Image (cartoon, rainbow, N blue to C red; front, side, top):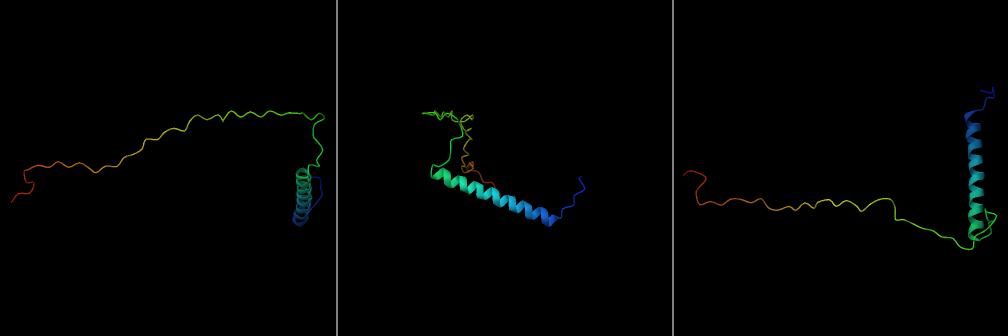
Length: 84
């Protein structure tokens, strides 16, 4: 597009370098957060916060019928099935 040719190795090297920098910045923020050293992201920090949860948007789980396995019923007769 711009006439600049970059090899695949250069792109890979730059991507890894940028990735390492992003990981280091993230890890530093985690450490600062755990030590409570991060500056607030808002101009005014509220004294109290309310969090409400409605329990999700799903109804109760549908009940699936329980299959009961019984022995097949057999009819007993006094007559013989097999001839003599």
